[in-house]
Image (cartoon, rainbow, N blue to C red):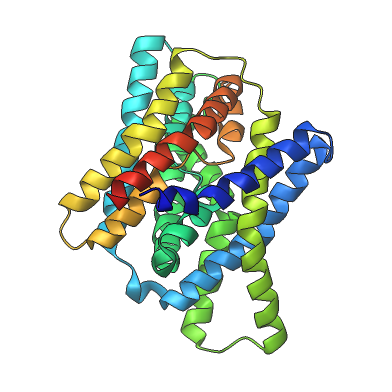
Length: 311
């Protein structure tokens, strides 16, 4: 009965390892961003490129999944932003960027390792679809809206779009997506030494990612515990996966196994650079607290989702 939960133990052991390493002083907290950047900018593009190459390029994309996941995530972000504005009096930019935390997952650092254990046969397909959805539609749209409506930044729509496009041009997941499409189109195999290097980097990526998650929790300063924090956490861990799964199950053309995969990616905590976006609108303390609460509570909610799927 509890076999699915037991299978997740390695995930949380690696997160715990990162937490203990930082809290004990074994690793200087100042070194954690360097580990994170290595995982994000070196390993993750290789993981994404390999997934795209194995899937076979754009011919295997499921546009209904992409549209459904994007729509569901946007609706959750919009609902969270409206509640933060109306109920808690947040500024428009801060409300939108905090709403991003409710509708955007830490897909590469948490979703990927969990999916590797639960649904290994679908990991490549899901990585490709979720990367496209979150990094081309979900995150850029939310960040652009936040920049346009913010009173503090005062960017025009054109300036906000240009700013977002500049960030997308150096987004490591998107760079990996492009590299994978090129490899898939060429059909050329990698030389043996490069193939071995690729395999080692793919194996290292989940370990480094989970270590970084644990270290981030250890260094999180949860100083703003209150209504907005719990709203974002509830939106991310409960509302987002529920809406994603409902939309994907309703849409024609989305296989049930892909809908389940979308649920798994949606039920994990928010993206790791959430606080960076929030800092642009003066909401970094709320974002950091929300990330800490969500990461801790996520151990329970992810387990509950896994048990429900198993049942």
